[in-house]
Structure formats: structure tokens, C-alpha cells
Length: 413
Image (cartoon, helix red, strand yellow):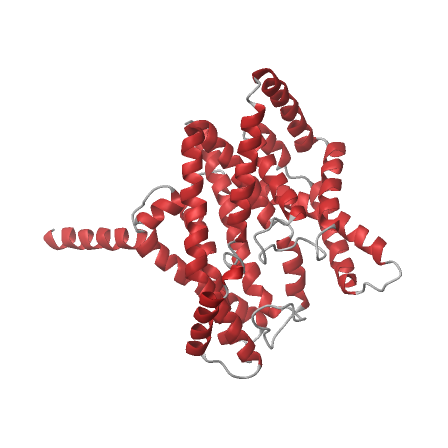
């Protein structure tokens, strides 16, 4: 692999890693929404600023993740073959999904129970855990739903669908060659032609129209595929898959410009202004307001995905050990963060502190504790092999050993 190609992978790993970390901040902010949204707990300190952040971050972070997942999936498929690809998807996605559900679901349910108690002025941690495990045992109708790991289920679904369709097309070599040339041209136009981008954005807006809520739905209540969500995330996965055939088109798609930035800011303002009308279904102009919102949201989504990748490319194209470590740890951080976030939200909900201080504390403690566990118990073990594809030395242990060796050397000198 050339140095330039390795640098490309470094920055794309950073894209994926920071998209997942943004998800941690997103979940940590939900208790500070100014209206109750059905989250585990509602803090006594809230802000409209949080609503804007939630609106913006939810519009593109998972789309970025699926695009990059598609890019790397195509790379793995063509470098290692079908069998190795399926094996890697089972190990890195299916196993964390299954084990994560059994390990995290009771903690999440207990967080919701304690959150409800918190809003009534009382919290019993042990009772919350006991009730959560009882619900897990008795409620077999909701297995594998109700957690933040739904994205792994959808990733498996989309990846299998793309591979199956590809294999069917490649039964006929002539058809496959014609189709390959056609999709390559389509990707070229999507990456750089505004008119084609308008068509793609129109398709996204159509999917958004059929969401249950204004914006992207979170399909965590059922294993039945949520069709509009599958189409949006599946579309970004497919786009990433096809971009790997022509990596230079990713550079064109992620190219930063003032026009792109100004348009993005404009759509953010429009979505922010229009979003309150989601609850006003009796408004005489409700249909037109929703149409304006889904159109603005689709443009915002497309541009934020492009800008986010472009900014990461600008900042992280050179190899950086810290960014590499963050990228490696991000998958683990996202898998385990939600129970920690919710428990901390419950613990801080009634404290008379500004919401921003609580948010910083929740994010810092969640990421800090998760990183410590990752470095000592995940990174150098078989779990690290499952999540990252290989084991790596603990940075903390390595530095302690190096320091001890240096001190011994100094003492001898």
C-alpha cells in the first residue's frame, strides 16, 4: 500500500471515529432538551441551543457512518473475497450486536426506570436493575430491540443486500461490465454535478416525507425494516461502496467551498425555524411547511455529510497517533456509552448546575471511563481483535513499562 493510500485510510477512519463520538455527545445532550421527548430523564436545566444541536447532528452522523462503512466494505470484499468479507462482518458486527444487546439492555432499561423515579424525586439503583432483569426475562417479544445497537442490525441488512444484488448481477459478465460502467458514471455525476445532486436530494426528501417524525426516525422499536430509513442509510452505504471503485470521486464529493458552506448554513436556519411546526398538524399550511422542512433537511443532510468528510480530510490526512487511537477506540466507545450516559444523566439531573457544565461532565466521564476500559481490557485482548481486526498493546501499560525501564537504566547509570 502506498503512503498516499494509507493516509487516505487514516483520514477516513477519523471520519468514522468522530461520527461515532458525535453520537455520544448527541445522546448525552438529550436530557437537556427544553421539551420532554420520551428520553430516560429530563434535566432541570435545559436549553434551546441543545435542540438546534440535536437537530443538526442527527441529520448526518449516521449517514456519514454508513457511507464510510460502505467504502470500507467494498475494500474488504475485493481485497479478501466473499468468504472473508462475510466472516469479518459476522465477527465485527453480528457478534457485538448480539452480545451487546444481552449485556447492555438491562442497564439501559434500568436507566429508564431510574430516570422516571428521578423525575418523581426518588432513585433506587438496585431496584431499577432488578426490575430491568425481570423485564428482560419476561418480555421475549421485544428481543434485540430497544437499544442504540439498531444501527448494527441495519448495517448487516444493508451489507447483505448489496452483496446479494452484486452477485446476481455478476452472473452475467456482459451485464456486469455494462452496469459497472453505468454506475461509475452515475457516481461521477453525483459527486460533482449539481443537477444530479438535486435528484438525489429529492429522493432523500421523499424518504423523509414518509418518516414517522420530522427528520430521521430511529428504528429501534422493531426488527421489521423501516423502509424509509433503510433507503436513506442503504443509499449512503451503496454510495460509499461505489465510491471505493473511484476514490478520486470521494475527493470531489468532499471538496470544501464557500457556496457549499453558505447553502448549508441557510438550510440549517430553515430547518431550525420550521421544526416547531412538526407538532402543529392542525396548521392550515402544515403540508407546505412539512414539504419545505423535508427539502431543507435533505439538502442539509447531503451538505453536512460532504462538509464533515471534507473537514476531516483537511485536518487528518497526515498520520497522527492520537487520531489513530481515537479512531480505533470509537467503535468500542459507541457500543458501551449509552448506559453510562443515562446513569450519569440521572445522577446529575437534579443538581443546580448549568446544563453546559453537566453536558461536559457527562461526555468527559463517559469517554474517559470507556477509554480506560478500552486501553486496559479491550485493546490488548481478543475483544480488541473482534472490534478492530487485531490486538494492539495498551498505551497505558506500554508507557508505564517504558518509564520503569528508563528509571532502571538511569539508576544503573
